[in-house]
Every structure is written in C-alpha cells, then in structure tokens.
Amino acid sequence: MKTIISCLFCFNCFLVKSQVQVDSVKVKDTSFTILKSKTGLQFGTIAKLEVKVINGNDFKIKEYQSIFLLEILKVNDFKVKEKHFLKYVDETNIINEEIKNLIGKKLTLFAYETGSFTGIPKDYFEYRPVIASKNFHFENKLVILKILND
Image (cartoon, rainbow, N blue to C red; front, side):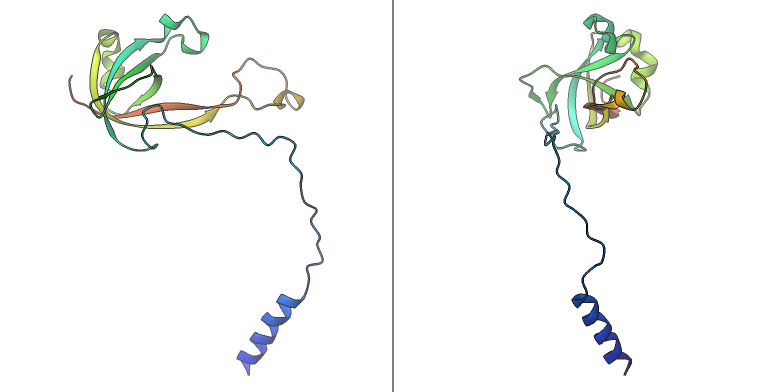
C-alpha cells in the first residue's frame, strides 16, 4: 500500500506545474575569458622547468616593483618560443631566502602552473568608491615544489 501511495505522489508531482514562474534572464555582456597556461601544459601539471630569476624593478612597471619573477626558458627540456614572466610561490623557501644571490641566474626546478582572478571588475565603481587597482583578469603563477640545482 505504501508503494502505491508513493508512486501516486511522485506521479502527481510530475503532473503539477510549478506556481513560481521565472522569466529568462538576458545577458548583455557575452564576453568570456579563455584561460591559457604559459607553460603550454595543463594547469596543475608538474613539470621540469628551466627558469631565470628576474628583478621586477627592471620592468619599470608599478605592478612588478619590489617583487621577483621567473622567466620560463625550458619546459621538460624543450625551449619555449615566447618569453613569459611569472610570479611564483616558493614552497621550498630556497628562492625566497637566497633571492638577492639568484637574480639573473638560471635554475632548474619542478613546479606546476596555477593562477587566480585578480583586480576590479567592470562597473565596480558604480557601487564602491574609486581606488587604484588593475582591471579584472586571470593571473598565472608557478608553484615551486623542488629546486634541482641549489
């Protein structure tokens, strides 16, 4: 008897239309972002990288002042075609401790590429006071797991 009542209840639920009607939402801005890795590998893929430590002050760009970047030279022993300079997270803490001695030097390391969205979205200032910031964008970075040559 319980099975029959349960089946009737479920059948009735399928037949009854919802009383709440939701209008479709039209989106004016159909822009989207395609996320691409700078290493040419999928995000999160651990790879052997040859990099060069770069002083961000050399770029004379406010965003890079007082930070250090890694220029990717090789990925899994293959030379890269384009220059890419990435911020990094050093889980070994070796680069962070020795950074002044490493500027301009090449390192071989194991790392993976990740990233996150940063900056201020379009129309932000319609809701909040104006502040100095970058536009909303995806920022790639490397996470260093192991350095092969110290």
